[in-house]
Structures are given as structure tokens and as C-alpha cells.
Image (cartoon, rainbow over all chains, first blue to last red; front, side, top):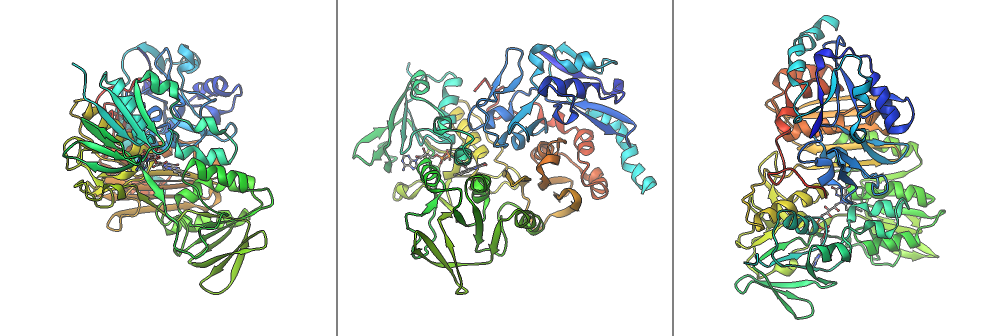
Amino acid sequence: MKVLSISPERCTGCMRCELACAYMQSGAYQPAKSVIRVAPLEMHTSYAPFTCFQCDEGWCMTACPVDAIAISAVGAKIVSDDQCVGCKLCTIACPYGTIFYDEDTHKATKCDLCGGDPACVEACPTQAIEWVEGDAADWLGEFAARRAGTDLTGLAAVE
Amino acid sequence: MAGKRHVILGSGTAGLNAIRTLRQLGDDGPIVLVSAEAPYSRMVLPYYLARRITEPHVTTATGRQLDEWGVERQIGRRAEGLDTQAAKLRLDNGEDVAYDDLLIATGSSALRPPIPGAEHARCFNFWTLDDAKGVSKTISPDAHVVMVGAGFISFTILNGILERAGRLTIVEVAPRILPRMIDDAGAALVTDWLIERGVTIRAGAEITRIAEQGQGLRLTFAEGDSIDADLVLMATGIRPNLGWLDGSGIETNQGILVDEYLRSNVDNVYAAGDVAEGRNRVTGAREVHAIEPTAMEHGRIAAANMAGKKIAYPGSLLMNIVSAAGLDMASFGSWDDDGAEVIAAQAPARRAYRKYLFRGGRMVGAILIESAGETWSGNDVGMLKGLVQSGVDLSAWKSHLAERPFEIKKPYLATGTTARLLPETIIGQPSPAM
Ligand SMILES: Cc1cc2nc3c(=O)[nH]c(=O)nc-3n(C[C@H](O)[C@H](O)[C@H](O)COP(=O)(O)OP(=O)(O)OC[C@H]3O[C@@H](n4cnc5c(N)ncnc54)[C@H](O)[C@@H]3O)c2cc1C
């Protein structure tokens, strides 16, 4: 199975992935609709994109009371708008915070891997997001931990 | 050799998840489903009331689906007794149903408060599909609805009432709303929000009498004054459906006591969902968690064990989310742990509130409140669940959270929460499509 592999050290924080994703999700360049989110780290000097891992459990999928979430041909957990009632249960079941509620459509929204041709990958100018064979992993953990020093000690300096 | 004969009692969340899991795991034993009601999801009834969905949408398994799973069924039948020696269920038509193993997933029922007049036809519970239909038929655009009880269930139907009725008054006997979902500070915020949106809230008030008044009802308070209502909704608590087990020898407390395999004190009798009292993942204590995710997880774990896999359950995590008139509120785990170390903060402009509870370095509970427009611009709702679920050590991050309580993404990422969570599955293997 192919996964979205993320190399945070390559991310420049340009946010093009968010715009491309928002457009795929909603047809509008509205970052709020993006389901990939660029996190600022290290006092906003490093960045890292974060999105659904298409995890083995599929916490969103197993929690859904009306089976509105299915697995697509490329292994994405996908929300069926016809079935989703907008109860938000998936958003508290997902322990990664990568499924959202859309206030306009009253539906849950999440990464669907763009049907196998992820727009974020194409939009990223530095290959920080790649679409490769492999398993999902904690792409950001070590990177964030290494940069945490500044966040943890920098506070005193700014305050 | 044919597999064991599984009897599943109850076709709600726990029962249906069990049936599906048995088949997903390749168990081809006969399955008999006995249930008082046809399969549907209670928790989507609020969306039926709000007219976002129609009645067929609440159905969770059609006859066709049950046929595909090869499920023999007795729908509309109630279990009235259990003989664990003979391994037989006694039904309300006098018939016996024999089992090799049994899953009790009878859920819970709504209580009616012992108020004189509470049985009037314009007083409704909102627990079953029939209740929901009754309310939906009776409610009208100019109706004044009085909701008795300001708990989580009341809040799930609040939006539907605001959409379909003229006016809403909430009466709660406790000193404040949502006493079992959020804390005092959170409740104060939600109360203000609702009052600003035209909802009347009367907390710390007891209704002593309900009587017919013209076309509607008059509710009299202990203080002596009264209000008139066109329709009264009662959501004053629920009780696990286990009275029919009296004399069966099945051990119960608040619910049926189950071990980590969702097994009762009788080896071939399992229990799951609202009716079961199982392990709390955070505290380790046995509790009834009458929520959908617990029913789903219980049902799947019980089924895995009935299918002969030995799958232990780490316990259920208390979690709730509800939106009232555009304000989101969520809570996780031991959000009311008096002995915990607390970090709490408000951002009044956004109506945002956060509360994190710690035991040592571990986040044991959390509350999040935020206006709905803001909530989903971040990843915080799920990340809080992940922090409580994984139990990562946040010791190094507590001072950061105290300074920047709305910045949970960094501690989440830097503590490797993702790495802790990725290998976890509920029944020990990747979930197939539902
Ligand atoms: C309006 C409403 C909103 C809710 N919203 C949420 C929410 O947002 N989040 C959340 O987590 N939870 C919510 N819940 C709670 C959630 O629906 C329950 O926790 C869940 O349904 C429990 O599943 P269960 O399988 O244990 O029981 P149920 O789903 O109640 O199923 C019990 C089954 O047993 C049958 N039965 C009962 N007694 C007998 C008997 N003696 N013999 C035969 N059959 C019997 C019933 O007919 C039913 O089929 C809500 C509930 C309601 C009513």
C-alpha cells in the first residue's frame, strides 16, 4: 500500500499543500477546508505537515454509528457524505486529530488520498510530502522532539 | 465442524458490532439475534428530529444484511429470564433459546422522574425510535418545549429542538447544566452562550407537578411558581436493562460485571455496551460507560473472544462531544478527577475553554469548549483523545501547557504520541471495511 510519507526537515512552511488540499476537498482555496495541516514548531521557525495516517484501526471508521466511513481502493478511510449524519463521534474517536467537521456541509471530512493522486504531494515544492510504498509511521515525532528544546526554554525568553 | 451457536441479545451498537465481528473473523457458527427492537442507532435519532435524515437512515442492519451474515432472528421478542445451567434464554412468548455462548447487549432505558403527571401524553423521553417519532409528530414551530434534565442526552437534541420549536426552556435539578459532562467553569460558559441565544435555563430547580393546562401542560416548581409548555422532554437519566437477570446468578453491580474479555462470572455469558460494567481504561476501575464508543468496542472484543481469539480489552475511555447552538464541547477521561493536577484556561473572545488534568506526567482527562467555527481549524479534539488514550509522559511539557494552554500540538508531536498509537487496534488486527 502507498502512504503519504512526510519528511518534516524539508518543509518550508509555504502552505501550498494546505491550499491544494482545500481545493481538492471543497473546490475553494480556503485553508480552513484543508485536511492536511501545517504545524508551526520551534517558535514558528520550523514547520511540519500533519494529516491522516490511514491507521490500521481506523478509529473514525469503527466508531461511526451509521457505517459512513469505508476503505477506498487505495486504502484511504473515506467519508460518504450521503451516509454521514454529522454527529462528530469520529472526531473524538480519532486519536490523531485528523478528521474534522465541516460547518458548511454538516459532514465529517478527512484525507481521502485524493483517490490515489494526492494533491498535497504534487503541490509540495520540496518533496516534504511523498507518495510511496510503505507503512505509516510517526513522521514528525523525532523532528518535533529535537526542536522542542527551543519551545520549552524559549518561553521564558519571550514572556 | 460447525462453530458454536452464538446468541446475541440486543440489536443496538454492541450487539450489531458483535455480529459483524464474528463474521469478519471468519466464525461461521450459527448466530441467533434476539431483540426487543429492530436494529437501529439511538445516537443518530437527534438528526432524525432535526430532519437531517429520514427514518430509514437510522437503520443499522437491513434484513438483507442480516441474511448475508446468516443471522437467524427473533425481533420484537424480549428476554425475560436466563438459565445458565441449561444455557437457555427464556423469551416473553414462553419460548426458550439455547446457546453455546451468549452476549447480553440489552443497553439501557430512560428513566421517568417520579413527578405526578410525568406520564402525560405530551411528556416524552427521547431514548427510542418510537420516542423520537412521537416528539417529531408533536413538536411545532411555535411550541414552547420544556426539557427536564440538562445532561448530555438533552444536549444532543437541543439543536433539533431549536430548529423545530419556537422556544426552549431547560430545567435542571442540579445547580448547573451538564453535571456529568463538563465542569463548573465550562457549564457557566455554555449557560451564557445559550442564554444569549434565547434559551431559558433554570438550574437548581425541581418540578413537583405536571398538569394539563388548556392544550398544553403546566409545570409547577418546588418554589411554587410554574411555567406552561406545549411539550415536555424528560432526560433525567438512564438505567441498564438487567432486571430480567434477577435470580440468574449473573453478577451485577450498576451493570453486569465483566472481565477483560467481556465475560461475566459465567464462562459462556458475555456482556457488552450500556449494560456492562467493565474496565475504565484510565483508572482501571470497573464502571458503566453508557456511550457509543464503549458499546462498539465491547461488542467487538466480546465477539473476538466468542470466536475463540483471546483478546484482552485495555478498557474504555469516557468521551463525549456535543454542539449546542454553535458551541462545541468535548470531554475525555477523568475530566472530573478531584485529585488531579489541573491546568485550565479561557480565551473569552473565542469562548474557548480548556482544562487538562494530570496524574504525574500522564494526562488523565481533558475538557475542550470552543465556538464551532474555531474548533475544526485545529487538530486539538482528536489530539486530546490521543494524549489521554496513549498515556504518554507529558512531564516536560506541563509548564509549556500552563503558559500556552491552546498549543497542544507540539507536546502531542514531540512526545511521540503517534508512535505509541499507530500499532494499537481494538481486536488485534487491522479493521476490515465496515
Ligand atoms: C438521543 C440519544 C443520543 C445519544 N448520543 C450519543 C452520543 O452523541 N455519543 C455517545 O457516545 N452516545 C450517545 N448516545 C448513547 C448511545 O446511543 C448508547 O450508549 C448506545 O446505543 C449503547 O449501545 P448498546 O448496544 O449497549 O445498547 P442499545 O443501542 O440501546 O441497544 C440495546 C438493544 O437491546 C434491546 N433490548 C433491551 N432489553 C431487551 C430484552 N430484555 N430482550 C431483548 N432485547 C432487549 C433493545 O431493543 C436494543 O436493540 C445517545 C443516546 C440517545 C438516546
